[in-house]
Image (cartoon, rainbow over all chains, first blue to last red):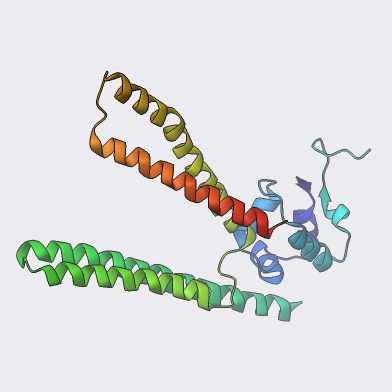
Length: 69
Length: 146
C-alpha cells in the first residue's frame, strides 16, 4: 500500500529504528512498510497515525495507483 | 519523544535477549543430541543416546518455556505474518503431494500395476493424518473467531 511514512519520519528526523522502538515493532517492519512490501495491521496503522499526530488516511493511500477519487 | 524511543529500545533489547535465549536453548538441545549420538558410536551404551534425547527435549522445552512464559512480545506482526504464510506454503506443498499421491497410490495398488514401497505408503498416510489435524485445527480456530 502506498504510504508517506518515510516522509513523516524524516520530517521528525527519526531513524527507522527510532520509529520502530516507539510503535513497538522491528526496524525491518518499518522498512518493509516504507518500501510498500508490507501492509500494517489496523492497530499498527493507528499507532503510526497517533505518533505522527495525523489521520491514517494521511499516512496510507489504499488506492493501487495512488490516486484518490 | 526521547523517553518513548528509549523505552521502546529497552523493550527491543529485552526481546532480542529472550529470543537469543530461546535460540541458544534449542541449539544446545540439538547439539546435545548430535554429540550423544556421535558419542554412542564410541561408547555403545543406550544411556548415552537417551541422555542426548533428554538434553534435546530440555532444549526444546526451554525454547517453548521462554516463549510462553514471558509477557514481552517476542515477534512483531510482520514476523507473525511471515510465519503464518510459511505455514500456509508448507501445508500447500503437502496438499499437492496428498492430492496427487494418494489416489495414484491407491490406483496402482488396486490394479496391481505397482506396489508402492512401504516407507512411501506410510509417509502418504502420515500426510493424510497431517491434513486431518489441520482440519481439526481449522475448525477450532474458525469456532473461536466466530
